[in-house]
Amino acid sequence: MKDIFLKILIIDDGKSGHVQQSQVIVSIIMQCMGLSGKKIPTINFINAKVSKVKRLFLECLLDYLPTLSRIVGHYACRQVRDIEKVTPDIVISCGRSASIVGALCGGGDCVKICILYPGQYAIKNFDLLIIPNHDSGKFTEHPNVIKTNLALYIPNAIEGQLSAGHIGILLGGKNRSYSYSRDVCQQIAKQLVQLKTRSGAQLYWTASRRTSKYLIHAMDREFQCAVQEHNKIECINELFSICDWIIVSADSVSMISQAVVHGCKVTVFSPPARMISTGKHDRFIEKLAANGSVATCSFDEIALQKAPRSSEVGLRLHQADIKLLQSNIEKLLRANAFI
Image 1 (cartoon, rainbow, N blue to C red):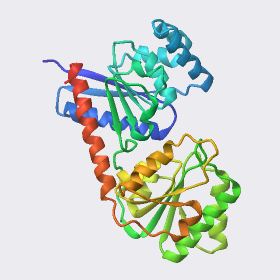
Image 2: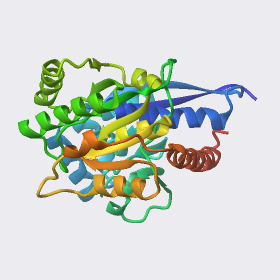
Image 3: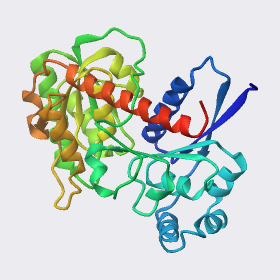
Image 4: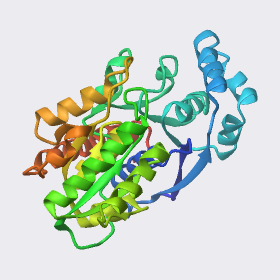
């Protein structure tokens, strides 16, 4: 039997968390194929930063002209044309912008895998949907749906000395569910100063792309005023390698999942909720808190927290997710004669 080179394409929407989740699927595909086998995957990336206006146009296209959507999409969206040139065997997309491009490309010539809710009209264009439980209520029935407990990550901590005396802080930012005023930012920073003073632990923190500049400035200002040392780390995986206890803001499902997947003891603090909220973050956190994967508190109670006792429950959830993914992806690969 001759070698078959399998082309895998990841549609990149510019969000590193989405790309990382797509890479988890690639790693599982490679495991299912067997790295010593004859089908050797090649992985390409294509940028798909689609504006909201164009995304809505393309979604309407899928709704009203489903039979012509691929043809019109080819001319309306440069990213679709770029994908057609690559001629991939498997297309992986994560996030709304990436998924609308993935839905329009390839026709029936490639296997299409979607992570996260792709929009009502794009669902039928994918061979496999991978949706977190807290987000799964949006879509209608689909023959191939995997519902996961956590966002998809594989532990990737940089080698370091894990210490019970180190606390890692993951700071997110405002979204549809939570708001961060200047006063709230200042209170969060003060609470973290008090926690460090009370616990005597070394504190490390990192910010996301959504973190308010007011919160970053408040962290620097409050720690300087209290003459307390704090360490800002740019690489989140470095933080996981040295911190036994992670405190993370409730606005980021990705950061919470990463902390749980890395086997850390996790406390989630909630900023003030918006008047109009999707509720998906609350559902996600409530479920993890109910089974003991995380502890929870309000943003004005951070200083009173103690490290949770165990991280084993969260690790078991992650292992169950990976096992479910491996089983379903292997079936998909076999059905399309890739293994």
